[in-house]
Amino acid sequence: ARLDTDDISLPDRMEKQLESFRLHPEISLLSCAVKEFQNDNIDDISAIKSLPLTHEELLVYARKRSPINHPAVMFKKSDVIKAGSYMDLHGFEDYYLWLRMLSGGMKGYNLSEVLVYMRVGNGMYARRGGVSYLKDMAEFRKIMLNSGYINLLEFLASVIVRRIVILMPANLRKTVYSVFLRK
Image (cartoon, rainbow, N blue to C red; front, side, top):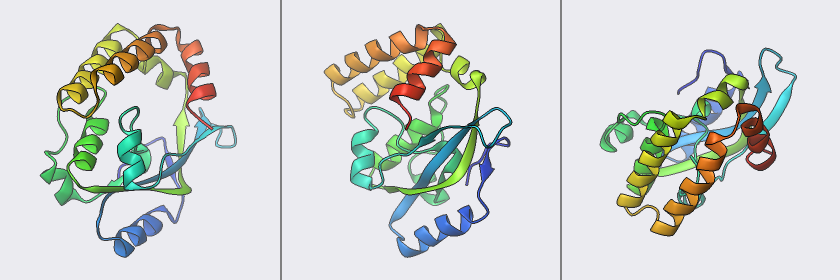
């Protein structure tokens, strides 16, 4: 399991995720919904980040966005190694690993239940902006194109739309994330 030091797992998170692995041994990659809260106030819920649940839905969703909530992920180490482990791709190492695992036939699944609270703040929105992040994103999308995971039209559309969001001021980017990308 992977959890940042400022995120909070619910007391039964590990038990529930391990039970899912036990009941469904074909699963290699597992996550769940997360509640995002602002700064130090766990009661200040800004959004619930739910993702598609089934492997088939994750494959489709992964063409546009990361299909796994990273702070809530649990995976089989042996399958991560089979997929080539983490590779150096600044800002997109996790997404790239999930993509390789899912497209390589390893099964992924998301639980609909919220089992993790994730701290978000202005720093998160600042990190997802700027020319350097734009270059990293374009490099990753090009890898997706070259691997055949997305087509040229999907590549161009995603880079153009993301470029607009990445280059806008952080406060405006935060609004775009909350209105269009979160519940």
